[in-house]
Every structure is written in C-alpha cells, then in structure tokens.
Length: 399
Image 1 (cartoon, rainbow, N blue to C red):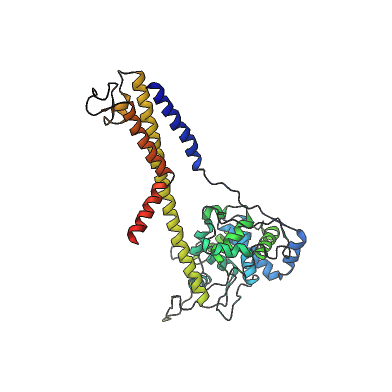
Image 2: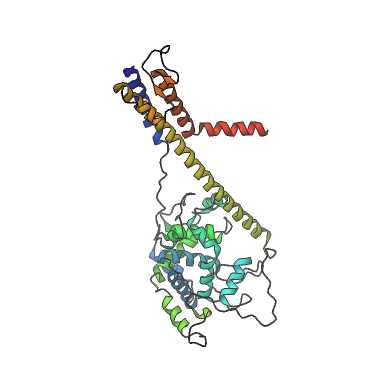
C-alpha cells in the first residue's frame, strides 16, 4: 500500500511541474529611441521662425514645470509641431479646430477657458500647454494604444522614416505602455512617448498621422530646447505680482498654475459644447474612444476574474497534494491521523479490509480517489477547461 501511494504522489508532483509553468508573466522591452542625425535636426529647426522656436521652448518649459521629463515634454511638443507648426492661433477654416493641437468641442472650450478668450484669436503658448495637460485624455497616456486604432496606426507608422531621418525605429507593439500617467511623465523614451501622445491623446486619422515626422520633430525639440528650465519660477513671479485680496493675500486666479481668469461680459450667455459642432468623422472618433474605454474596463474585469479562477485551481491542486502527503504520514505513523486533520474530519483512513472497516472511513484506494478528484478538478479549472464547458453550455441553452 505504501509503495502504491508513493507512486501516486510522484505522479501528482510530475503533473504539477508540467502545469505550473503555464502562467508565466509576459515580459517585453519598450522600443528603443531611434537615431536622428544632427543634420536632420538642424534642418528641422531651420524651418521654424524665431517666434516659433520660442514657442517650442515655452511648451517644453511649461510641461517640465508640470512634472514632465524633458523627453516627455519633447514628445508633446513634437506632436504640437506636426499639428500647427507652433502657430499658437492656427485655425482650420473648414472644421473650426484651432490652437497648437487643433482643439474642437469640449477640448476647445477648455482651451478658451485657460487662455481667457472666447474664440481662436489671442491664444498663448503657455496657457495652451496648460490646457492640453489638464485635458482628461492625459490619464490615457499610461495606457497602450487601443486595439480599435492600433492596426491602422501600426500599418503607417514607419512611412517616410528616411524622409525624416529616423534610423533604427520600430513599430511600437500593441502592449507597449508606460503603465500610468506618472510613468509617461517620468519617461526617458521620447520615441514611445511621441507614439502614445499621438494615438491616445491626439488620435488623428491613421493615414495622415505622420508618426515619423512627429518623432523627428520630438528628437529635434529635445536636442534644441530640451534643457530649458521649467516655467515654475516665472509662474511664481507672475503670481506674486498679481492681484491680491484686501488682506494682502493672493486671490485664487493669481496662484501658480491657475489659468487666466475668463473675461465674461455682464449679461453674456454661455453656450456649452454638446457635440453638435463635431463633424461625422470626429463623432466617429469619439464613439471609438468610448468603445475603447468600455473594452478596457471589460478586459480588466476579465483579467481579474481569470486570475482568481486560476488561483482557485492551483489551491485545489495543492490541496490534493496535501491530502496525499497526509495519507503517507498516516501510513507511516498509524497512531497519528494527519488526514483527518487536513480534511476537517471528513476523510478518515482505516487500514482494515473493506468489510471490516468502520462506517465513514476509507482505505488507500478511497483516499486516493478523493485526492485525484481534487487534483482533476483543480487541473480542469486551472487550464480553463471547465470555463470553456460552461461557456458552451450557456450558449447552447440560450440558442
């Protein structure tokens, strides 16, 4: 009996060594920053006027003041460059989009609020950058590119790499991400940061996105003005010269980081964006983004459920091993009932023949049957077989 039990234990241990490696943690390296030659950087920079170069510097300074690394700030600026060539009041006469990142809808309303204006005239680089960083989509900068738009973006990603002087660039994978907004803000990977800002924040059409141009521009900004000091000191200085309350304390609009106080005329009615100003393409993009959020929530829920179910399967399998080990202890030390303890009195071993065995006790074969039942159930849950059966059953019942 002891030999047979030992053989069963060895079989279960061998099965465990095969099954446990089935859940490795995925691992991959983020794409490395590619090379952009000094000649290309100088050529890019020369296309900007002195005023536009100063605007690029202001964008980087403001982003760094908000806690973004030089590389992340350059990635943001590279995207702005592609969208507007650093013309702060650039306007699309067809769509009505305006500003350095061509804002529309609620995003445009936020842009106007930060700049203290009611239309596309009078926009400023610092306030525009603040509005961009305050936009709700900034929270998406820690996510990977949504599957809805990844395929299209990836298919055009390396277009014109030679034209824009990018060598050694690769297409970011659908899994590449910074994990959180803080991860994006602190990154030294300007290449992936440019990609994530483009796909998750700008969300342009895939064919006209021009990722290689954005990446080349980001590398240029990083090289030319990446070491610009943050704007925090100038913010503080301007706040200290701002308006105060009667007690000499700065009012809320003069605090560092606050946008300019909106100038609203007395009796002026406010119109809030409701989406009616969007074009069909923009509404489709908004719908895609909503679907993205829903899919992301569903995916996280599914991953959480899968983790818990896998844990249950592992626990059941390990419990089977514990039962078998307890049986071996009881066989070696008859006066000590380890099996009864680990099964909370449900399973008791008896060495007597089946016809003489007290009611409610089991021989070696009976205990091994219980043991293998737990092991089999754990294995079926762990490998997803039971979940697949249940899914087929539900589909069959509903069809």
